[in-house]
Amino acid sequence: MTYDLIIIGAGPAGVAAAVYASRQKLNMLIVSKDIGGQVAKKAVDIENYPGFEKISGPELVDLYKKQLKANELEVTLDEVLEIQKPENTFLVKTKSGKTQEAISVIITSGATSRLINVPGEEQFSGKGVSYCSLCDGPVFKNKVVAVIGGGNNGFESALFLSNYVSKVYILEYGAKVNADSENQELVARQPNIEIITNAKVAKIEGKVFVESISYEDMSGVSPSVIPAQAGIQGDGENTGSQVKPGMTTGVEKKLEVKGVFVEIGYLPATSFVNGLVELNEKNEIIFDPKTLETKTPGLFSAGDCNVSKYKQIVMASGEGAKAALSAYEYIKKHK
Ligand SMILES: Cc1cc2nc3c(=O)[nH]c(=O)nc-3n(C[C@H](O)[C@H](O)[C@H](O)COP(=O)(O)OP(=O)(O)OC[C@H]3O[C@@H](n4cnc5c(N)ncnc54)[C@H](O)[C@@H]3O)c2cc1C
Image (cartoon, rainbow, N blue to C red):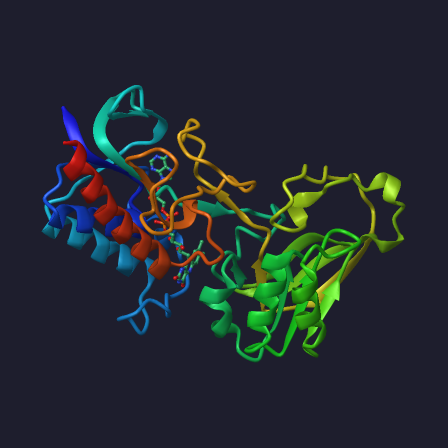
């Protein structure tokens, strides 16, 4: 059977694409590893999605499920391993061993935040550890927080947070920050932001919520024992190797903080695209902003897997809707 459309992913972008495609009466298959994507993992309430003053991640996912059901849409839980386009149609291969065929495909596979992998990170995730300052920043009003990552992500996050919190520490693993000069100038003008370089984050501690972050001060350590490109603790734009445990021996220091914002970049879920789309240096999909089409005609992409400065539910949903309408135009011409 050849579907009109296959949607890969069922986060905000995938759900929006599915709802819009169903209203165009497209015969579609939705394949996803889960329903809700990053929203399902959100521990703190969402307060910036229009129409909802406050809604929890699981509540929004329940509403997604209800809306899919109301539109007679089902999600096939499976993982896409590869997309091919041998001739005019697309073949989508999944982990369960199936190959599905469609005239058009929309990729909405999203992204995951890069982790720092230190003790306390997982335990306090949603209890002071956050991967999204735009989403969770206002919760930390008048508190002291730390931002991990001295690249543009970290600096922009610290600038946003400085409007709410009493103090922001930016912790950067390297001897120098990587943010561009404009962001550095803006941060320099903020009296409540302090940059700490040579800071190798060691652990996050607290009782129920975060109370402190400890780091090794590497400033006195000879550069010869610090591995080059220790990017995992640096800027999101770096993709260097991880610091090997025990390789460095700086002096341990502790900061009393209520929040820790990890801003070391994203890992877009685009490993299955098989050369059919153009990727940037961060493996995000490059697309036509008018139609959301990729370099392959009939293959569209939407949401956090795409090149975008801001990764938010409202934007992913908007792109999903736009991609579905563009896919409909394509399918009409090629059916
Ligand atoms: C902790 C946290 C808090 C956040 N808080 C907010 C907030 O308050 N407000 C806000 O606007 N935004 C928030 N965000 C960001 C928001 O969640 C994302 O921008 C949004 O979820 C992106 O939607 P998406 O559909 O593009 O991708 P995702 O939500 O990442 O969904 C991707 C989907 O694709 C599926 N998938 C991935 N790979 C495959 C594959 N190979 N095969 C099949 N399926 C696959 C996944 O299972 C998932 O269903 C937050 C993010 C995080 C992590």
